[in-house]
Image 1: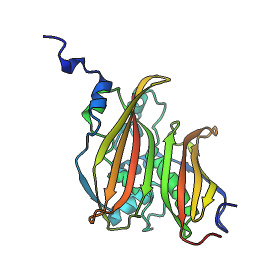
Image 2: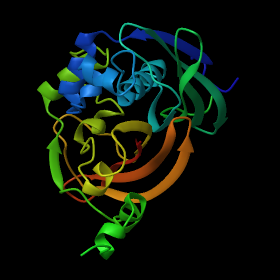
Image 3: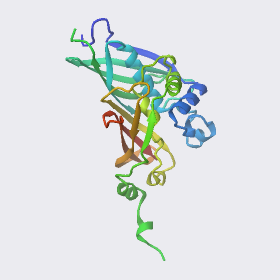
Image 4: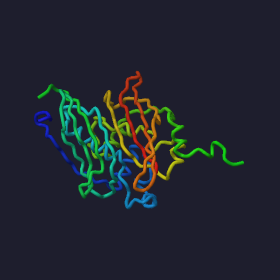
Length: 134
Length: 141
């Protein structure tokens, strides 16, 4: 076991971005690139639907890890690469799995996957535990 | 007159020459209303006061305004993001940052040639403490 006591080794959660989600994220983040809310613009660039912001997917992953380790540690690194696009109204599975532990530092693999199970985001996170080793 | 040095420069060469380019310095504050809007947008409890690890995404100059990047390809794609948290941000914190273009690499993709651009942004507190370092890979194609 690498995760602390009473903390699961792996978690997943499904997120689905609506148009409202994408507009809310654009407004909150200040990223108003039209590909995320202007369908003709997105289609002119070869996309079948409105694209989910990469940084929204990263935010979902950050929230996943923060809620997973809530009260037990804090995220010190979140590092992702985008392998594929996700689109409006399509389920995005966000996942994390503990891969190692060195003292109070936990290493985690994170990912998003589309409805077919294809990983569209891959990456890692590190959590610094705020308690001693279990 | 034809063939000036300027017109002979390829978009990639222009990008390589632009390494070191910086956006304008900016100052942002983790404000209560903004935090609520951001938490709601990412699906978190909007009444929570914990500052998400990715909040500084809101303080990036995004998409980058660098002219040499806009002259390459037709649009932006996000290639990757790295957040290194050195000092967690809290509600009310003021951070100063400046996006810097640090590297470019050209690759052959499935749909043609593309350029991978690396931008680094350090977010510092008023006393100079490094709070968050962000590394963004942005793609022009």
